[in-house]
Each structure stands twice: as structure tokens, then as C-alpha cells.
Length: 322
Ligand SMILES: [Zn+2]
Image 1 (tube, rainbow, N blue to C red):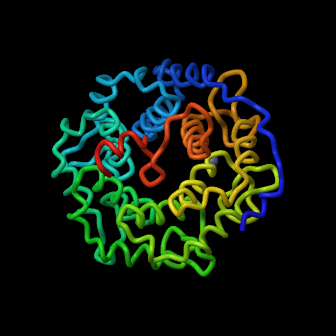
Image 2 (image 1 turned 30 degrees about the vertical axis):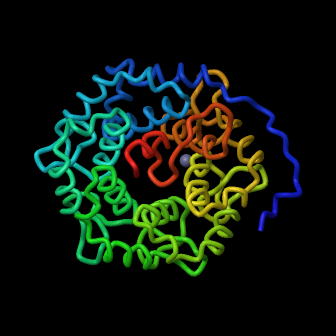
Image 3 (image 1 turned 120 degrees about the horizontal axis):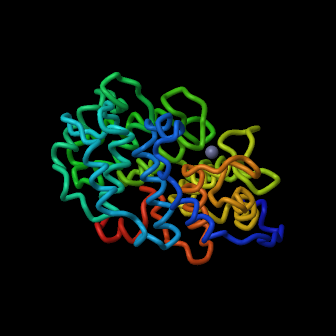
């Protein structure tokens, strides 16, 4: 199955650790810039991406713990969900990111877990799917966010599990992958959300793992990078979206490791630090997070191991028996 096993590719670049730390330290400074206000809708997400980047680089002690916690708590709404920024509406995406960061910082006791869990299950539809917020948009990302969040809160028993599992299995396609809803084309990001959800719910035996592994391994392009769908350009963040389901089903060796490491390292900004989607584009914290976590799954030296199901440090998920 490993079509790349006969090719010997040497890793040709190094990870620019100190530059990435410099890039991360500079984020959030200059808060009066227009750019900062334009990105308010990403604020809680950016905190998660940044925390995971520091942690994966083994530098979690540099996180401003109390500052981060007090900002997250200021985003908690009356409903029990988190908004992206104080004064905005709550959403499942901000809620799971906030809960993930609070767990990383050993601070889940700072919130009312039952209230947050009640908010999450209030978004589940009768067919098992989950809305992103009270306005009702539904897709597999939101159900994964809800399942991840409830597991971290220790409240998975509040989910309608059988309906959730049925709905996820309806998102599966003839190629072994998953789309954003039943009938939608397979896409790597939705493969991650569906496979990670099934792994958390201990239902991996319900899928054809060889067929899924084949579709995922076919995402590797000639330059070593991974794409999200056939015929699309490779992108460093698909290092995470494609590798994490492969890690979950134990088939990481179905792709060419060194080729992907080279592609990911070529997406580093050699001057400013940070990763972009591909060589010579502008770096951002989202691609920095998922490039580093992908390198960790590839066992690149001196990176903190990551739990592919939750995209959290393995040390954290082990500590809490997840
Ligand atoms: Zn990307």
C-alpha cells in the first residue's frame, strides 16, 4: 500500500525554532492596528492555535496563563457558550477552543462544566447532527467540536450518542472518506472531524479503514505536500487534516514521511518565523499550529507528542484519562 516506500528522500531543512517563538511572541502586540480589529472573530481560535504552537515547541512555560484565562472567561456568555470576543455571540467553535485551552492550563475548574455541557447538547439536532450556534448552520465540524468538548468536560453521557454516530456514518462516501454532511463530497478536513469523532466515541470498527487509508495516502502530491481533495494544491495545514486520521487508524507509514517533512519545512518563513500554507506566502498562526502538530505526528525531533483525536498535547489527554 505504501507506494512511496522505494523512494529515498533526505530531509533538507531544519525547523527554525527560535524564529517561530519570536513570531509567536509578537502576536497580539500592536493591538491598536486595524488588522487586530478585523480579526476579532478569530480571537479565541488564535489563542488556541498559539497555545498549541508553544506547547508543541516544548515552550508552554512562556504562556501568559492568567492573562489567557481571564480573557477566555470574559468571552463566556450567559448561555454557557463562549464567544470569539467579549460582546459577541456564542458559537460551538469558540466553546471547544476555550475548553481545550482551559484544560491545557489545568483550569477547567474556573468554569461551570455542567452549564457549558448543557449549552453544547442544546445545539444537537434530533437527527444527531449539531448546529454551530442558535442560527442553525449544521456540519460535521460542529458535531466534532461538540463531541470533543463534552469529552474534555467529562460529560459525553449527555450526548445523544447513537444519533450522532448514525449521522456521522451517513456522511461517509463510496471512496471511504467523509463530507461535511450526508451526500457531500469527501474532503480531508471532514475526514478528520468524522474519524476523530468516531475514535472518541470508540466506533472505529464501523468504517473500512483500509479504503480510508488509501484515500488519505492518495492526498500526497509530487512535492511531498498533502492536499484536501484530488487535483487541489498541497497546503501545510493538510499535514494535520490528513495525517491525524491516518494516525488514528494506525497508518501513518502509508505516506512518505520525509517528503512531507520537507514540504512542511519549506512553508516556514525563514526571516520572520511562522508557517504559511505553502512556500513564499505570508505566515499565520493557524498554519503555524497545524504545521507544528503535523511535524509532531511525523516524530520530528524534540517536539511534544500530540493526541490526534483532540489536537491536544498527549501529556494533557493522558493526565485526564481521555
Ligand atoms: Zn491551509
